[in-house]
Image (tube, rainbow, N blue to C red; front, side, top):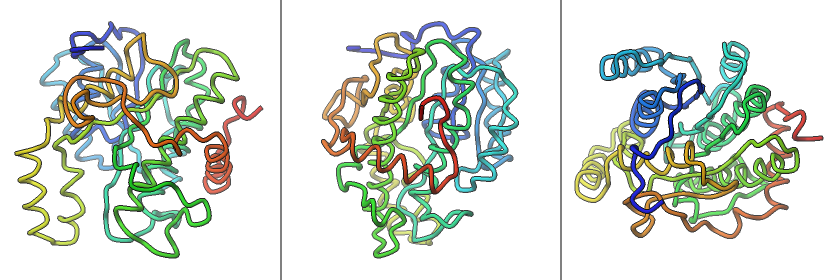
Length: 308
């Protein structure tokens, strides 16, 4: 792993990948590098216009790249079901659960869930479950869940998953990122018990400059906050290309272990991929099972063979 770069990505020819939120930032870089190595990549994007622009960009940069758009809104379970039902391939080798929202004002998804919990966790929980048969059909398939070091700010509140009692945007974001890691933990445990070789791991980009940080201030018209974030992105953050390396490592490297958490090597902030610290509560079997049960009830999605 020391000094790992995109040059170390194994050949992906013949493999099919789905990357959520692939129209920009970490998702676009991840999709690009998988396609560069020969994978057929579905860019799962909420905006058709931005998604098509990303596909055109990749095709221009990588002539012959096998990339295509899939319309997916993780904040709408009907959209998630439509995407999964229309998935045109019999196998799925790599699923990167990357898309997310960060610290917006309080809002709800199309199904009435708090926006961050609904999109960052429940949408990906439903998507992964609905695509599970195609993942199990691909020997050695990978699921990579993108979390954040910000998960350390808060554990989930199983009695208030939708922040109905009190909404604090950064605590809600941290809880959604803790949910990502608990989902990884529980899915990895169930996959191991089932057999079949499905590898489930998590990754985070450290502090990478993407439009995720500015989306909240822009939506609220908080120009001073937006300028502050942009300065931080220029001065402190690493690039999206560097931030995507832990995700690409988790998605492709033969040495990835189930339920591992990969991030940047230097202070978990920037640098080459390395094992990352995670809060102890993200490794709780009991919490993982409770969140799993709640997620099945809220989404109506069950995991078939992995629930047996």
